[in-house]
Image (cartoon, rainbow, N blue to C red):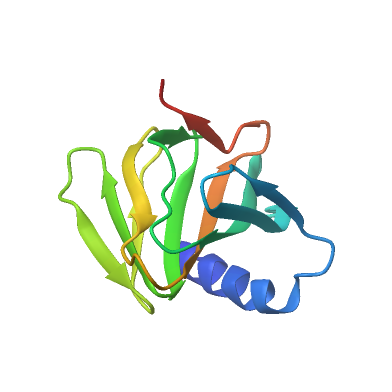
Length: 139
């Protein structure tokens, strides 16, 4: 199965699988809700995890890294998200746009681009099944 098919299937699953999700609040206007977690049966040692990230107006995530093995696909559902990954340019992604992050990436900017409207994205992680911490703040 191609990665694009896995991502598309996971997004469709997110629309259906929302009951029983776990939420976390970081106190800065951001809420992260895990929507899906499953071992990928035809890719030994790999799992797929999907989370929704809701940003209040003008909210931001602190600079962070993700699980060392994680390849991440991010898709903006609502609003606009300002993002900078590694040494790439800072970019504003609007609803319907997406980007990816390679394993080991530093996500130095991740925030709602609007001071007045909320924003939401879906992040899909393909990672080693035993890679536990999805996000680690950079100190």
